Image 1 (cartoon, one colour):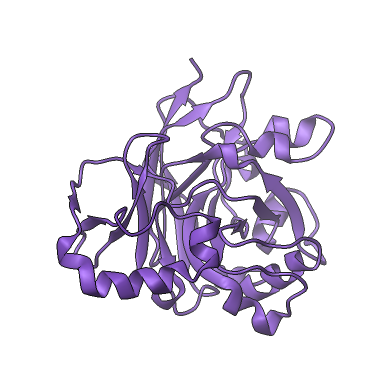
Image 2: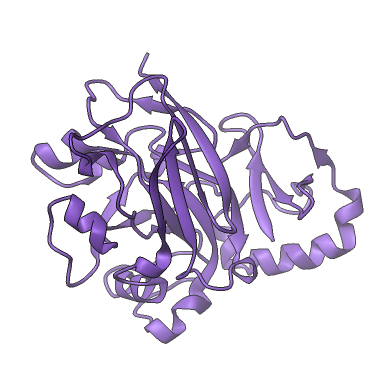
Length: 284
């Protein structure tokens, strides 16, 4: 099942995307895709309800905006340098354990919303990533149990301002959390839709030019390892997001480096998780 949220910014409703591309409004059954929904086996119960009630669900027009397919989670945990070639292009050693940082949930945006280049930015960068949606509370879980705690997967552009991230003092979060720096979706694919999250093709283009073209089989730490590892240090709650890192090909790693500017168009996708597109705009 593919979960979507649709409508105007901050007024989205929950829906589903059918295999033929039809969008259905399921707000008569569920209020939103949030912690409560995922904690109560929401996707499983929604699928059962939909099997009996699909014909009565309103159809959502194809031109209606898609929002981020999840209501703001309690946290967005990101894994840095999780592809060896990306570590190399960043000039950093391959990590011996996952590198963790946070991204503010206020950065979430719809899959086709604009990326707003923040005030004072000269080094806004792109990062295609596979993100995990947690399905049930996870604390001190093993790698063998990790997949049982996942509700689904979603396409994420971990937009980053490299000067904010790397050139000032403090942690990476400053360069990761600007408004619109987390375009998410177009949909959450529940786990039955994705046979092997550790073998998915992912790619990103800027103005039509392929910049990132890789596969999650190149993970240093795979999905199970990442979920288990993070759960040793914090409790993961239903609806939390884990972004698993980006492959090589970011602007920072080019020679000379190349960064996003107003007017640029970023397009990205992952097998089974759809495609998103963001136009870049200057902060006004």
